Image (cartoon, rainbow, N blue to C red; front, side, top):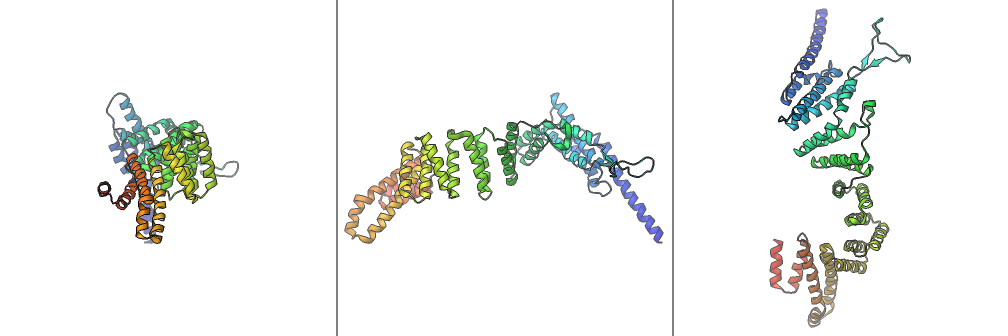
Length: 423
């Protein structure tokens, strides 16, 4: 009985292996008939069990077949497109990406042991190691490298359809092929740094839109390492990505430093960001050195004086901060942040004087002091807050300060107007 059971198990195992091999062969025949991506996917379902079956999952042919079929379908659809026929570009790009994915899996498995024809045993090389060869690698490498440029087009197609995950994958593949030792002498030559940096930017944008923040940061890192891009917006996005990553200061500094070096005083916001980073890190000397140099080169730049005011404020030098903010408003009467910053310092001064006077003066003395000293300060605060909000309606803090000012001035009309704006 034991012999029969063992024989049964052996036959079952052999049948299972034969069944999986037959599935692969049948799928190969069906893939050759594929005319569109729907048929490709249907045939892919047929061969999918073989991807995880122990009898076939280590065989390069199992993955080579759908990989080659994916590339062939892409080529067929691309040919139809060239002849003016209506082609689903997303499905065409999906076929390309499937071709790549399965081909890479086949390439990783494409090792065949050489058998000695005389002994029937594995052949050994001169070092006594088992000799191996490849069966599909040459064709796989040719397919992938031959479609190199197509991956950038696929990325653009996916981007246009807002499929940012696939756009990211396509741009990643495009950047991974040139100079890749896996593809040997057939690998395309390395892209120029400027071109590679541009595609790293696209890859980063796709990752951000796909909510892949770590991948976006890696792509921005590569963009910077390659020398960066001439697009200022890329650095804004890079900074924001680093900021979202729990205020990754090393990256924030790296991205902003390159932007400042690349665009200089033509884009003052990068200096402001750079200064703010150093201030946040309490590196006041570096921040001051940067600002002093910038002001010497461009003494009429209101933004630089605003940053100087912020730096002085961070160092608790309020007189210097007040003077810098005031200078910024004189150079640019519509610099909303400087207007509000100056008004805020005036308000702080007002609160201190008001509190001290209330504690030390009689009511009659206080009333006189209010009219002669405090009321003019309130009117000046109102002037700068009104100007700040007029310059930028996002400055709602200016409205909140105005609400307090007009309440103290007993100005019912303006108080009602401001409260309406705050609704």
